Image: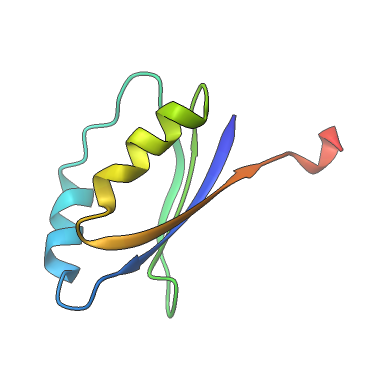
Length: 80
């Protein structure tokens, strides 16, 4: 499954968020497609693959101490 998350950094937590991203240990069953910093809001965009919603949620929860995540399931347009 493909997931798309946006991360809005909590004010004053930018340095902590950068440290988390820099030292991020990605589980074997998670595949990051892209992790982008954005010019404007939201601050970051993360697209990744996970086997199910539960694993995706546990991965995204790594960021909640420093950012507000919003995550959606992505479906390829070709599959519609």
